[in-house]
View 1 (cartoon, rainbow, N blue to C red):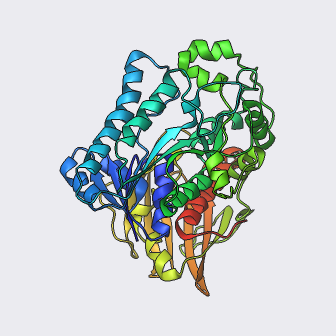
View 2: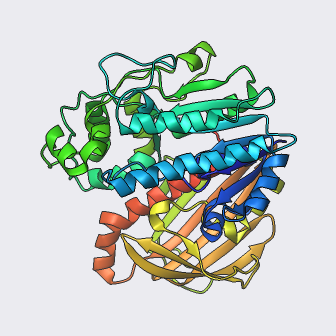
View 3: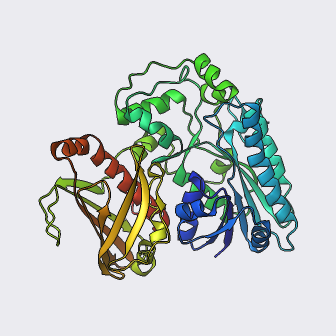
Amino acid sequence: MQTVIIAGATGLIGQALSLSLNRHGHRVIALARNVAEARQRLGADNTILAWDDPSAWQAAIAQADVVINLAGAPILPHPWTANRRHVLQSSRIDTTQALVDAIGQSDDPPKLLIQASATGFYGAGSSSASEQTAVGRGFAAQLCSDWEQTADQALSDRTRVIRLRIGNVLARESGLLGKIGAIYRAHLASRLGSGRQPFSWIDLDDLLAIIHRCIADQTLNGAINACVPTQACFADLHQALRAKTGRQFAPPAPAWLVETLLGEAGQLLTRGRHVIPERLCHAGFEWRFSNLANCVAHHLQPSSRVHFETSQDVTPQGKRASYCLQATTQTYSDKNSLVPWFETPLNLGVMTPNFMRFSLQGEPQKMAEGAVIHYRIYLFGFPMTWVTRIEQWEAGESFVDQQAKGPYSLWWHEHRFEEQTGNTEIHDRVLYRMPLGWIGRLVHRLFIRRTLSRIFAYRMAVVDRRFGQKTE
């Protein structure tokens, strides 16, 4: 077991990485500017230290094996005004400098610093770029270069430094696909620019595998391009999304319009460069996804493990359902390791996609029969309070929660765990009914069923990441 410190742990990569590190038995310490928010997103497995308590996290760095810096304000979609450029620089350079200083002051410094950067390091160009290619032109390229140079100050005979130049990360309900997926599902997306501009990308779980490889392989150091070896362009992304969501009715957005609206920031969308992960190829790394269409389809298509049917089943309280959702997740973990994670209310937020903005209200009760849990969610942009009550409880085997307050007329969710020679199957069965009669049934057909499918598919992806998976 190694102790891994993550700065920027509440972002897309950090949340997934903490789960993956937990699965492999590592101890994770997250540095967070908002500790309460970090607990909601990272769950009960990890230690959270406040960024504004430097004595605590500096002491932790002195005991850590690996530091991973993912911190940085989002580079899009805001135009790069003078104030925004300052935010982008300080959130990267100042944070990295503080971590580097703590590493340098340690008597026994961490053996590895993994510094996030981006393929934007290379700027735009007609030729392909490998790790040996010089920094490109423009604000984004210079920002990456300054970021990396700051991280390199930690390099010593005791600390290895890896600079991951990461492409666009593709994931279910998160990252780029999470941001633009709703536009495509509404059939309002358009092609950006000519569509011929290069698109550098990486599947989220492939990125996690790269990070694990960097931790384990002590021969890796310096710059590493974390993207796929195959070339793609924005038109390929647009076509892959159209193939899963249907025809789009918005006209193409010309490059000049995108750059007028976003300024230099828009050039990240209208220009680019093909990037080659030369060092990973030479190291024999194997990508799960290197075909863009296949990756997009995997993250957008409904899970084959989630099934719906109409139902007239009745709960023990005599409430009749209209629909039944059933899902089965098979993991590589034993039941004693898996079930306590599900029985911890703080982990509910980890399993909930970010578009729902899940937050527990108050200190949650310990899971047991009769326990009541209050939380807040957003559905279709509208906030609502959900109160759930544990109706049945068999510790380590099964439990049932029922909506006491929320958007459904009935929500009865059965969870059952079945161990099979060291593996564990998780069985979910939900009986539910919509309010408002035929209007509710129409809303279910148009929106709710698809949303529930997305929620449970995301939940399964999280479980796969935390406890191992058997692929569909």
